[in-house]
Length: 336
Image (cartoon, rainbow, N blue to C red; front, top):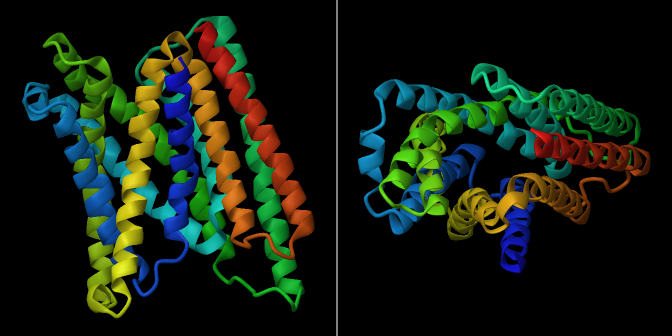
């Protein structure tokens, strides 16, 4: 139990911190950074980690019906598109706002859409509490969005604050990127067929769960990200970024960002197994809540809210509402 909570704390730290690498990646352009991040974090790292724990994992993928794989890959592609919006949103409006809005929208859609698509509706009591949690969560998203609008308004009227012309675009990207969480949940549910085959063959369930991640991320998810990044790279002719002076540190940040991103997901899965029955209820609540708190800490630490006292207060209120909603949703899951 203690080891499970320790792994969960590390996973939450990674989840709340990986976005730091998306804030400043000079001398890389966004597209150069995203190519490296996609190759390392979305393709190589999931495959490498899974191959270490399940050496012949591809065998179970090939044994999975092609119709299941296509749906999972399509969901991965939709997530890949939303991941691009997520990355650009951090670049435009900062880590704390992006994570807050994305978490709220993503959790709301991610909890409801898979239930209806997969026809796996919970009991009436659980469903009522779940819908209540979703309503509270959307209120939290609304309050955080309001904080962003106040920040943008102050930036336009306060001469001491640097005007961010891409703020509204970033806010929109943060909102719509939340759809990717629902796509991951649906895709993972389908891809878990391959993980089940591995478990039936004697593979440890904790390790077998990684196979589903490979199917979703290393297929459609990877293609969506790397194709768009390469398109922008050649459109802007910024491929010389890879050999610019100081590029070594940019490579390091991109690789570390990709590794932390997937490590957060992989370690959360392991912590859930180590925590037993508490894993999917308490574990998920702690994972999301701590990641949100940590991302806000980094956002404040890096000066995202410097000079924006009132918007920061509003954002903190929104985050508290989100944390309450996550607890309500966790309780609803315990009743399912």
